[in-house]
Length: 117
Image (cartoon, rainbow, N blue to C red; front, side, top):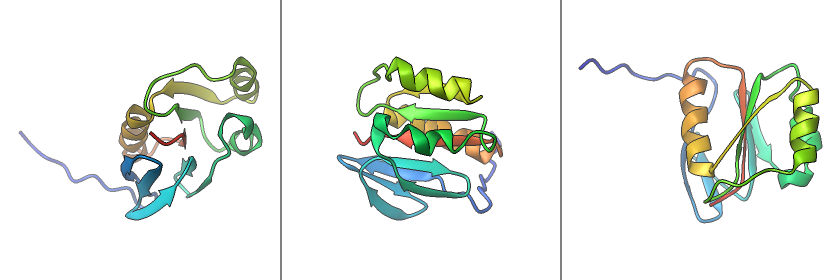
């Protein structure tokens, strides 16, 4: 088996998570986060659609982590994001973090909006 080192250039992967926190690029952050290849910020959850809509044109897909368990996001939020041209993938937060890291390493235009576990 051949192992390849994964490089993220300037982007910061999600290194870990736990009750109420995420570790991104080695730094600990509490609460919900919005992470892109160019940075991260706090995210206000499902009501904070403006932060996600601002990504239109810069990312193709937003991975939404719904916490410990997978759950539906509000239909109005999904509709707004899709109308803005953003793909939406909903999964539990651990799966969303893993998927984000894999596609980030491939240089994809993605974002992660994640609620803590």
